[in-house]
Length: 241
Image 1 (cartoon, rainbow, N blue to C red):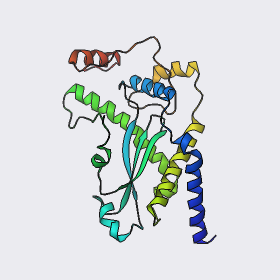
Image 2 (tube, one colour; image 1 turned 180 degrees about the vertical axis):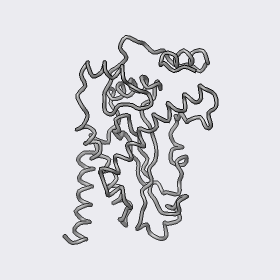
Image 3 (tube, rainbow, N blue to C red; image 1 turned 180 degrees about the horizontal axis):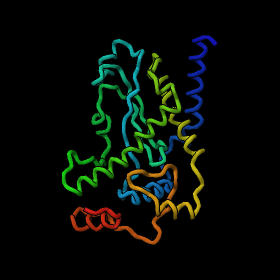
Image 4 (tube, rainbow, N blue to C red; image 1 turned 30 degrees about the vertical axis):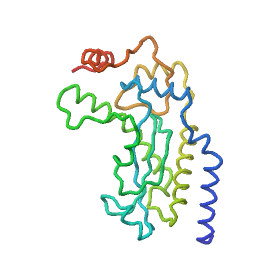
């Protein structure tokens, strides 16, 4: 197949995937999804936390020379940023692609209103425990990027396209196909699976693609800002200081 024909087929394929499946596989969470995600976050020690957000840089080999300065970041090579929000089962709920690589994560993510950042250089036991738990939660989206690149070599290597719009469709098509794979491999949970998961669940190493419908036999109170309430909450999770 000629090179021009291959490029045209790729363009038509990616645009077709986005046009047909974006409404289903790039949708916002439904009420049932939010219930499941909030319950999972509560079990892992972060009430009201839904998902993790991060950025991935895709190197742009054929970036136009006039744009090279805008798209070159600290690595001195042109890149385009994918901003993604992923849940514990690596489903991507939000994908925004196209920010120039000269922007750092703070520039890209500054528009979001609510963040819980890690504690830099934690020293006290509470700070160390919190930092470890949160860093474990942040691995969801980083693991998602690794799976995305492992599944699709076109986003693992450098971007060879000339038009940014074509690269955008390639990335979104890969995200949609990734979510299809996650949906296909997600097991149907039974009551026995949920009970087993409740006993074996680990905050630092969450199990993949297991749905939990809510707490059984234990009610969690909201975490307040005062030290007494926070200590009681951490004790219920089995974390000692």
